[in-house]
Amino acid sequence: MRIAHITDIHVQRRPQFSELFGKRFLGAANLYIAGRHDHFTPAAQKALVRALKAQELDVVACTGDLTALATDEEFQAARDLLGPIFAAQPSVIIPGNHDTYVAQAEAERWIERYFGEWTGQGDWPRLHQHGGVAFVAVDVCRHRPILSTGEIDAPQLQRLDTLLCNPELKGQFVFLMVHYPLRDRHGQPYGPDTRNIKNAAALEAVLAKHSDKIGAVLHGHEHHGFRTRMPVADGPDIEILNPGAGGYAHLPDKKRTAHFCIYTVQERGIAQVERFAFDGSDFVPETGGAFASGG
Image (cartoon, rainbow, N blue to C red; front, top):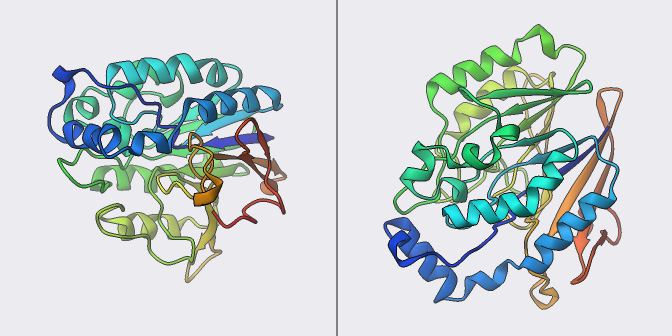
């Protein structure tokens, strides 16, 4: 199976004055006054769609941050842009912290309003199974008035532990999808504390119990991609993969551009990892092989 992994598209639309409350006011100032809106570009986002259309894919997995400020207009624009890609084959989507940027977007599950066909419904974690590959989708994104931290509560941890014991997963390759990194590019616990999962150690403890069943963890949030591993004392280490932001502007002088990955799964293992980089016009295979650029 060929599985595309995309993340952190950050479709942006200038918000209405009436939408500028709470954290969104600060975020909009950061984007449109401080100039960070140039970090993401429709050119890369549209090229991402073209590149995915050109691939023969079995599944698309998206690890969140489809929007920048979680406004209705951004969600609609993201749906218009990415909906045809998600509809072309089975797809799995989890929210990112920018998709739950304000309390209303989190409480009313706006991401499900626009992408519910692919997020699924009900309590998290959610299990998606496609062609012998299982996707365990975890939601750790919580609205925070200022910070960008996430958290997983005890009931979801318990459900995750139970789900990973499910006999249905036997013989399947399992991807666990979470927006935030568990580890940094050097394999150390991810930080700083203003940007990570507050109780990441509790989530890692559950995953360590089932490390023999988890093929890889897929995440986003960190816009420069990397590949690392979570060490497990009494079992196999767990591979962790982040392609990097899919909507990043092409700024070679800052060593920044958009990426996405394709994983080929064969016989319950990842046989190949391909990473594609935006060259300003199109996405092309990363020079030197996947993650050779180091970012």
